[in-house]
Structure formats: C-alpha cells, structure tokens
Length: 508
Image 1 (spheres, one colour):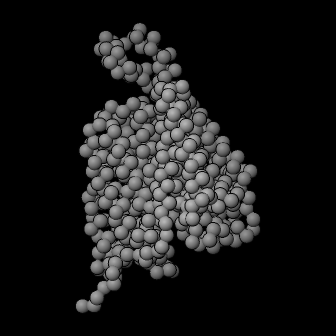
Image 2 (cartoon, rainbow, N blue to C red):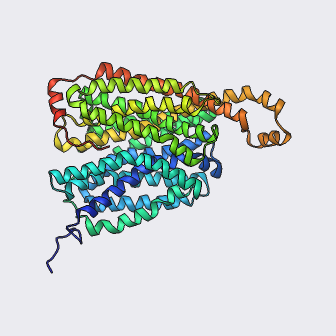
Image 3 (cartoon, helix red, strand yellow):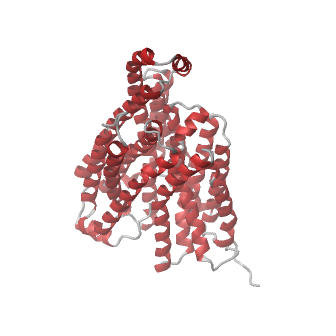
C-alpha cells in the first residue's frame, strides 16, 4: 500500500463522485435563493412578521452572502480549498437546522445570516475545486458544463421543491432539507476531493466587514423608513452609519496591499458599466419575485405548489434568452444584448406596475414576467463574459466574483428600496379602505382589525396590490439606469469581439 500525499483524496480516481459532491453544493446554494421565497407567506404567518420586516428573510442572507463572497474565495486560495469548502458546508448545514427550529423572527434572521456566511465560504471554492480536480481540456469543460446546468436549473427546482415541502410538510422543511444533503457532502468531500495547493496572501477582513456592515446599514435604513418614516432617529442614524462605513471601505481598499475589491476593476468603462447594469437589474428582480410570491398566494389564493409552478415559465424564458445570447455574442458583441435585454426588463416591470387585486395570473403576472425574464436571460451570460473580458488570468476570479457580489448586494438594496415604496403606498391605500371596511365588515372582522390593524379579505387584497403596483413603478425606474448605461457607457471594439470568440464556458 503506497503512502498518500498530505491532503490527497482517500479514494482517488472517482471524478464522477467528486463532481457530484461539488455540484450538490452549488445546487444547495442556488436552491436557497428560491426555495425559501415560496414559503414566505407561511413564514410570515407562523412567526408574525410584518410584510416590510419579512424582506429581511431574503436580505439577511443575500447581504452576508454577497458581502463576504470575495473573502470566501480568498480564504480558499490561502487556507486550502477543500478545507474551506467543508467549513462553509458545515456552517450552512448547521444554520439550516437552526433556521428550521426558529420560534421567533430574530432566530430565523440570525440563522439566515449564518447561512449567508456559509454560502460565501463554500460557493466560490466549489467552482475553484473543479479547476484543481479536473485536468484542463474536455474533462474540465464537461465538469464546467454540469456545474453551469446545475446553476441554471437549480432555481426552477427550488421553486417546485419549496412549494411541495411547504404544502405537504411545513415551511420549516425548506430549511431542514439542507441538513441531510450538507452532512452527505461533508462526509464525501475528504474521501473523493484532493486538497488544493495553498498560496500565500492576506485577508482583507477590514474591507469585508466595512462593506458588509455599510450595506446592511443602508438596507436597514430603507426598511426602517418604510415603517417609521424618514425622520425617525434610527432611520437617519442608519443612513449616517452607512455613509461612514462605505467611505471607510473605499479608503481601506485604496490602501490595502491585497484588497478584497480591487478598485482598478472599475477603471475599464465596459466592466464598470457591466456592474452598474447588474446592480440595477438585480435590484428590480429580487423585489419582483418577493412581491409576486405574496400576490399569487395572498391575493390569487394559490397553494405553495401552484405558486412554484406559476414561476416555472419564467425560468424557461431566462434559459432561452441565455442560450440565444451565448450563441450570437461572438458575432454581435455584448452591447445589443445589454440594450435589448434591459429594455425588455423595463417593459416587463412597467406592465407589472398595472397589477391590481382584480388582475388575473396570465395578464397580470405571467405576461409581464415572461417579458422581464427573457430580458434578464439576454443579460446574464452577456454580463458574465463582459465582466471577465480583458482581465488578467489571475484576476478573473475577482472580476467574476465582484459581479456575483454586485448581484446579491444589488438585490438586497433594491428589495429594501421597493419595501420603502411599498410600505408608504400600502399605508396610504389602507387609510382609504378603512371607512368602506368599517361600513361593511362583520363584528368579528372589526374585532380582528382592532387587534392586528391588518385589513382582511378584499380590502387587504386592494392594499397589498396597490403597494406592489407602486413598488413596480420604482423597480422600473431602477431599470432605466440599466438601459441608459447599456446604451451610453458600453463600448465594444473589434478586439473585444475577438476576445469574446475565445471565451470559455460561462458559469452563473
């Protein structure tokens, strides 16, 4: 029996199992972005969240995931990717268990933060492990293809799985389901995946903490303003803290020898434009999915499974748009896809702003989402490739990681802004509906309203729909920034097209 090298897989020569382990991790990460969304109305009812506070179930996860993503990738390089990968998986699994057991809103939110940290550690290293596990050439390209397929299909699986688990078992199972999968990944990883070579480097902890805390303060300010108004002391204080922390982040990054966010990445106008487009589109997309999930279940009366099925056509058109852009990108370049994709996203959101309590699924939900989804599909692959085009090989990870961070942070920020708009509009609509409610409600309904201050039945539907409608006007306004950036900022030269022709597999 020969001696194994330190860090070698205990059972070498099983690339299929190694790839399954890596893909299973990515599936968990992608699933978590959608599986919890379908359960949101049930989480709200069980733990007594307000609609505005419910946004933290999404934002607490995306903020920590996006804010610490680049630090997680750096940790894999310095400490060893397998070790860091397993740490992230164990942390995510533990957080999922704690979230499923939560009895109070703060307990669920704390678990979601911990899930975000675990994902930020495991996700970037899972992709990097493919490069250390599979030799360059057809074998590695096939592995990248599997990884990309899981990334693309995971969202759709999450919608269906979330619906089935919530309806057949309980909302808590959208979190519990991660536990057996996580344990299996943690057990199989040292058996079939070899540790990567460790590199010297420094951790930019200060940069990661100030950026994440700054964005969290900004998001908290918007959500607080939705409930307490703009003159509230905590609202003003959180915005002030956000400004100080984000300025400190820029100062730290300019002086750091190995910054978590190399500011030179923003020197190229095409790359900077790409980040701005992703930020504004993600801001609109996260808000759209959050509020449409509430609409189809609370207003249209869909069950969780029906809600999951209602979103499936959107994942199909996103895939169609992505396939189309990947096919013709080397010929046409990125700009046409960015412009057309952003315009379609804007049109979809403008159409969605017409939603009311009388809207049907086809005319009020499906039609606008298909237009929006196809526009997003045209952009996803285009933005991913443009973000890394012309970047030195050793900085490609930072460039693509920064795009992913922009997506997560933009989604959190956008959802918080839409929540502020939603809160103000729904509060105004509720004040209009109260006289009609008091004139027509039963004594029991009046007693429940006095206790909860929530309008029931058709009155509540009108309030929710009006808040969502005005929120989508704000989402459309965010998307205007993407349209302008795509049209004015993005410029592509012939050399850029040549570089795109040789672009490798697209992940994300």
